[in-house]
Image: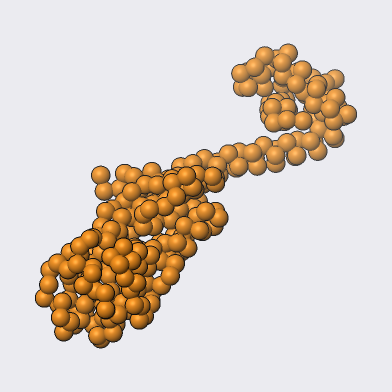
Length: 293
């Protein structure tokens, strides 16, 4: 039994005529008759009483018509739902954002996407970049936004922004009036870093090691504004993206915009090369690539 058999049968029952049904189905009468006969043979019943002037459904035909009507309606509903998914009238999207990235870069893009596709539900997960990578790798997130570099054999990568980290110090710090510093000048400082699992933790630590010293880490946090407050209280120095350091409220903090060598903070969206992408995820990727153009 297939959808064509059910569709032909339902139309013949509705029209009470093989010839009228054939016309509406854009088929020939012999073809329609053959299809109905094959359905009767398959089910082992007679569907129509053909001895009367007008076709009449048999008792078995009445039962099959109810089934055929329900099945064809479900088929139409299914196709409609699938089309809605393709058109992004509905769907679910899961997106991983490290807090420092979400706060400085993405609210407007997410709001614009929601405005254009209100039927798509977006679930935001805030975790450090390394954790976001792992969640995308395990298909627990559709996409993530991370700091480069990442394994490009594992992920598709769409670059979003090129940034550098700025040094923030307390207003009373000896370096507070400087515009440029060498990382080697920070050898004896107390560092306040993002927690392990955040890409910024690795970036700062690796940059210091390249300059010949292991940074002395006094505190770790997952919140950029709290890091700013700790620096303002004289608890240490910190590195923050320039887009974030400019938002600090504390008057007790000074920003040194240039470090030698610079610590890069290049953002990219990533998604797995090896997992299925939903219509919503593919829609987000397309939207993201065109956003702002």
